[in-house]
Length: 401
Image (cartoon, rainbow, N blue to C red):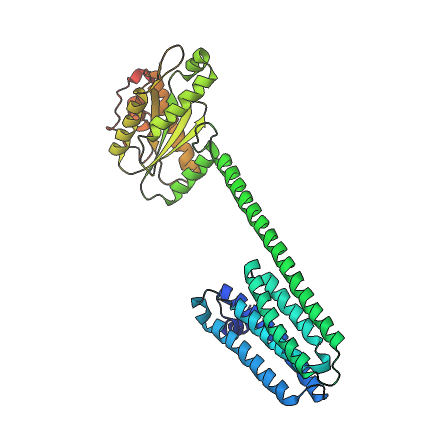
């Protein structure tokens, strides 16, 4: 909305447009607001005569200068050069110093500083690690110890030793609780991080199983269809699809059993993949049938690659308890048709590759046949981009039409 533009520009000017820096600025601004509220309260108490006005003024100026420095360092981006870009440790320790200083300035109302201390510790618990928190606790013991010693030494009017010891006990209790909460929060964060990693791995595994064949590890039919549509939309060169069918695979299953059949499928997969280029995609289409996607405009090179695949499979020997198995594969392939939607082009190309595969089977198997060759021999209409294929490495007979 137009009315949001000036407000967004103002927020970007004050808090920056960088998301991480904006969060740091917001947190530092909130801490500054808390300390300024404390300064306002102290000035009210000073006006009421509970504490010295001149010391309160200096405390207010020191507090304002400290947090203004934090905001400037974060807003300018200089803090990003530091190991703690949010200046969290600096803010906590400076706040502890100013709170301890306020403790002996507040006189009879010094118990108010314990509320501020609890806010600082809460901020530290959520913004630091247990190790950093322990360092901050030690620092808090130091500065508040100095404050307590100063108060004990001066023993101003209204001083009660019992009350001071009660304040000291409250400070120790707050520090001990902060350490405990920090350790517990750290353990919870670690557990949540592990659970997130486990969920991420499980999700990745589920996504992999949904897109891949369990046995061969190849992409499955559904995922291959998506890959083909994507490739067809973004592919500058032609998209060639080949159907590969293991010859007499049913006979292997019937003779040697399904365990050997699974072994054959895995060996076949390895042999085919060993003959492919990095950009080619092989998928298990169903049973002993596979689909190979080639992204190339070089028809002759594609035909040679498919012949290399056929030869690699023919060279396979798979040992079995009874006798070694020799494999062969029949391959039918076709190029995509121009001027169609991705789904139509893929469907038509697969249908043409299936016709070429049927022709290869009819001509004795163990050969590579293109749809262009089948169309030429059988006198069927060709798609616009399917010129008669002089690159087919098989020489099937027209009788198979």
